[in-house]
Image 1 (cartoon, rainbow, N blue to C red):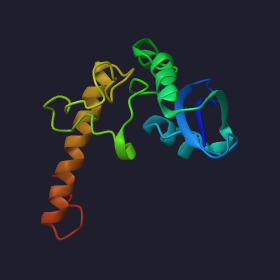
Image 2: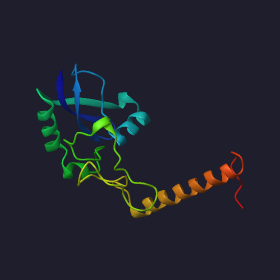
Image 3: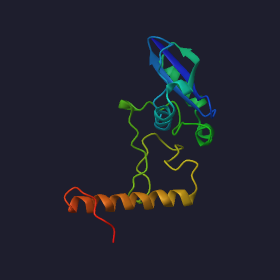
Amino acid sequence: MFYTAYKTTHLASGKTYIGVHKTKRTDDRYLGSGTYLKKAIRKHGAKAFKKDVLYIFDSEQEMLEKERELVDEAFVARRDTYNLSLGGLKVPDNTHVWRAHGSGQGFSPNPAGPGTVPWNKGKTKKTCSKVRENAKAIAEATKRRKRKGGRFAKEG
């Protein structure tokens, strides 16, 4: 078993993701599991990305320590990365419940610890406001649709 730290790079933009992976083969096709990274892979295709194995370790502990060193607050805050949370934090079952809720009540508790970046990383207040407005409009349209038997009601 290999414990690796790797960097995945979007070839066109140069945007990177640093992560860790436990694997039987260092040359597998795994590119990463970050939320933004997975969206970018779906959008651009896996061939638009390159993965470089940075380090190979003998233990999971060493691997996580290196990720903690590489993916610090300064790295996560950069706009040229796909990383949203600090490295070295082993998250069971690979879920991230620290994403923002659409309730407008702020952010949910962050089990990944302080220093993670919320959903609006790199976005202006104006953009965030538009996202919230659109979410409210979608919720209202969905309510109207349910009231009209599954079809969208006309505005007016």
